[in-house]
Image: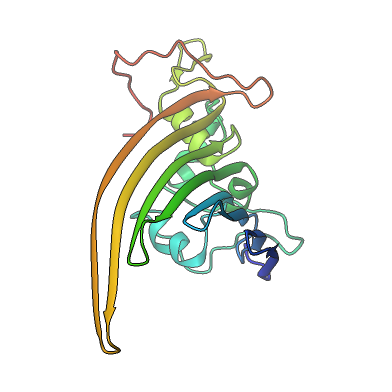
Length: 287
């Protein structure tokens, strides 16, 4: 469940120009291997700034910032969450053995007594045992964030004491989350078994189809900002200064998104079950 952490950070910056034009370009890359097996995150940042003096009174500034962050967290089984949160009210019993001497994953008791699981598995239910290490290996959980910000600014020098600033900014951000617990995970097998119906001839009907559970969501942010400002500054003698500003600002921000859960998900074909019955109440084998 644990390993050595590793932190990697790389950065590159270039800048230059002349009296009429200057620029800054920067690139960054981070990759962090976390102490929990299978968890890691990566981030790429890119930024560029340009300043152009069009005339002695007019100056133009532009900048673009881009970020892409990918966070993978399939392993939620750190010690504290395993003993307290991961099991809810059924805490992991002391000295639970997660693997044998050769490193092979072992089952641990969760939610149901072992004697009960022996009886229902003998009737033909799906394997119902919980195995932390197998769950980590069969879970995919990630968040992908992409953020783009573009800025445009103009400064006009009206007089030596008064100048006009106009700034515009546009931002676009998408956040995508994905949690896949395939058919080998406890979460998928548990919900399948809870609603399975054993027929009189020993066959089974699966209202929750055999397969994985896929949870997805996406949030999109679009914002615009326009700001205009007049700046006034005057110095009297050497120890008196007057600073004054007047301006306006217009801002628009819009967020949209969706989320969905797919049952019976097939990783090979990338599809899930669509003919689920959400109307009828079904009995469960767990009393």
